[in-house]
Image (cartoon, rainbow, N blue to C red; front, side, top):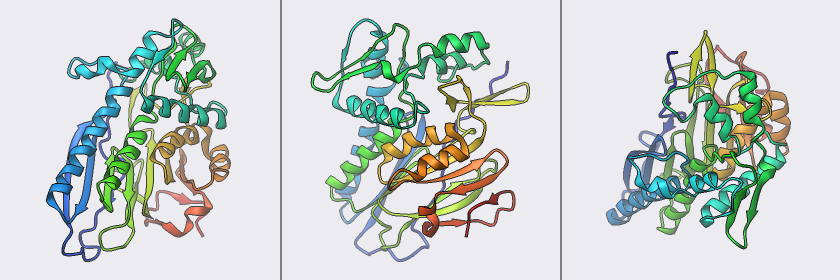
Length: 354
């Protein structure tokens, strides 16, 4: 079977400040990019002090590496720190004993459990056995049988995660259970990097962790950042542009990690209730102040589909969402009306654009 898994490096196109206004003379742009957390991460900061600008970039990438070393569930020879991953140790001790973990891992798991409960299990970080069954995270993917899927699903249940905040431990109740924090780790890391940049006095910055975008403050000229929402079926094309500041924009789609077999696309966006791909949507975009929340929410909104997803998103304070269905209909929450501009893309039908 030929594997067609693709890693899309940039999911959302950023409109930087060049040509969009005058930058204060004392501020200079400092930018760097590195391949971390299995994606290309780009960080741009503006500072009137070169030492501070360089320090900000260094600390930003150090934080991404630190969170990755805590949450990576695959031991990698190229990364010796991965053997110390909290997630690896939790999974190895499933059904055996609680595991002492870092405050960051506790925070990530507790926030994930909050949204797992709120979404009725549409987001479930115990999806690891099912992801392994499909081969996601491995070199080769395949289509498992229904019998195999049902067996793996018996190990998926967020209610069997026991968290002891006072003791700092996490325990998976059943042997064979497996945490997968791939749906939240980048968002959490991005949020922590934003905090670090603020502590250093950075007032204008843009972080793009493979499509997990956080716009800190405004552009240096005082105008909002403009973040493009990609066309899920067009190369380097957009369907819309969002104006944001102090906000996260996170997009998920069936083009991120997938393989094809028999002319059918199988993406990593799997419904925890069926163990199979959700197919009503091809892309969701979430806009929220918290990068952690935006990253998490993309998955249940995608799984729930356009109608149930819209109902769920509309009930979340301070959260906006854009849905692109398989038949190329685009819907969005009302609170994005004044910051969302659609491009002249005739391939898509904007349902509730006024």
